[in-house]
Image (cartoon, rainbow, N blue to C red; front, top):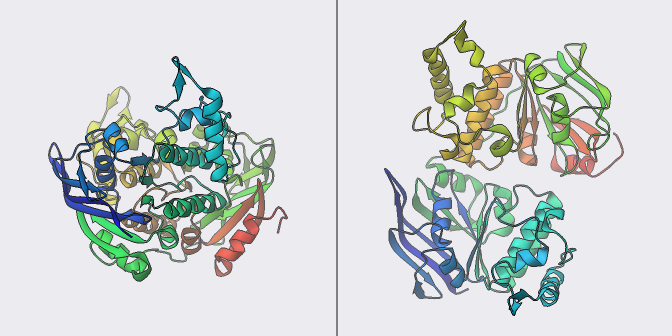
Amino acid sequence: MSELLEMKHICKRFPGVKALDDVQLTVKAGEVHALLGENGAGKSTLIKVLGGIYTKDEGEIHIDGKQVDIHDVESARANGVSVIHQELMSVPYLSVAENIFLGQEETKSGFVKKVQQNKRAQEILDEYEMDVRAGQLLGELTIAQQQMVEIIRAISFGARIIVMDEPTSSLSTKEVDILFDTVRKLKERKIGIIYISHRMAELDEIADRITIMRDGQYIDTVVTSETPRERLVALMVGRELSSYYTKTDTATEEVILEAEHLSDGKDVLDASFNLRRGEILGFSGLVGAGRSETMKILFGLQKPISGTIRLNGEEVKISDPQEAIRLGIGMVPEDRKDLGLFQESSVRFNMTIDVLKQFIKGISYSRAKEMRLVDEYIKKMSIKVASPEQLVSGLSGGNQQKVLISRWLMCTEKILILDEPTRGVDVKTKAEIYYLINELAANGLSIIMVSSELPELINMSDRVVVMCHGRTTGILDRAELDQEKIMTLATTDIVA
């Protein structure tokens, strides 16, 4: 394979920070080249330089052996570079065809030639075996289908280098398979793919080579098939992680929560399970299984039409999150940016918003007491932050997740629900979160962990509840846990 892209000696500075320090990246035509590193390693900054969002301070970019000047998004596109961001940049109220040709519409006398545009779009959709009509509104499609439309849009612009940033973070297993099939077709066309993901198993399947970054610097480039996972982790964090998953047996026989035949009549049809003190109870299932919706019922965000919830043997009605908090239940939601955090508020505000009454006596407010608690959790959770007053939007995904977990630990006494707790965070932060989860369970907190990552569930759970189409299809003890058993239960509607 020939060299398609070379980035040499790339440097990028921001006030007080050198985000990229002499970084290099080489991508071959027809190669999937993964970019790996912790949150804050410089991956996003590097692809923003390549995509024209940032202008490099030093270094050179070569495409097909020719030095090019990429200073904005238009110049990146002109040089065949397209970036598909984790947060999709599509327009939901426009049609699929209009999204594909947005910015490159074919016109006549000032009017878009819609018939021809729809025909061309449909031809490309059919070529990539997408069961989508060109005239459909984009907002009617699944996230996976919208992502595919963005890939097709990049191709229609003549992109030869496509960056995919965490492309599978919101996809089901079946949708991931479809995406990978498309990536392989792009490889056959000699398109170079830069693939960013924290999911190691994906890299084994799809990546040819991997470039590792750490603290804004280039560390190494390795061949995927020749490099053990432990070696990749060591390159990322600068040392060996002796124990990636931390799990001790802390569950007692005391049942703290019982849910019987919960149903909201739509997403959750028949969910039954119990939770023991000090237990880590995993929840597995494909997209649409009803896992997150079941958690919303437990936390008062979604009202059941039938079923029973008992805490310590007593039936309770959880009508809203305030009632859940009063009963000692906390929840870290799947979507931390939109549902969990106040992005334009400080770390301190996000941590203490639910426990402010602790610092108020009469008409007086103890800022010192609040700051002592915030500092305690910043230290305990190893949160990288310039100060407690830093906006949470300025933190990496992993540090945002730690802030959100800290917030709920401050006000949760009995049960903590974690919905996809390690989604979008790097390997080192994952290991830290696993250690924390295990420590919390050892101290008597009962934890429900919803996850799409089977290795995470298998290695961290005492038991796993499996759901399919809104129903509990089985509950597996730790000794029974393996991927085949979980996937069998996740694809059947017959209650075990």
